[in-house]
Image 1 (tube, helix red, strand yellow):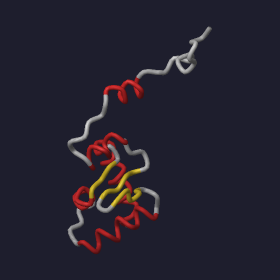
Image 2 (tube, rainbow, N blue to C red; image 1 turned 90 degrees about the horizontal axis):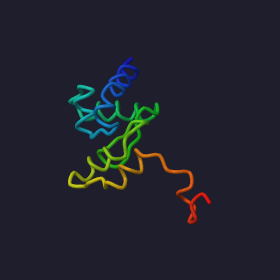
Image 3 (cartoon, rainbow, N blue to C red; image 1 turned 180 degrees about the vertical axis):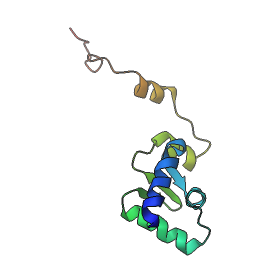
Length: 102
């Protein structure tokens, strides 16, 4: 059955894609050139929970990267330094208190 094979292909290509696929990406990944057949295969992946439709022409895997999605939707966008720090540096336990830890 193709659906199991399709799910494995999507899982294999999801990490380098950041979990974000355009319709053209899926056409290449699934090696499906016939539009109706591609639509059915994508719909089957959605029904099985492998993919979710984000908006027309874009699909995301379960563990997609928000930065990858925003870059695909708006290629001229940028991620702020503040966002990078917030994700990579653990917050101090007292940082949220106005008076600190005292």
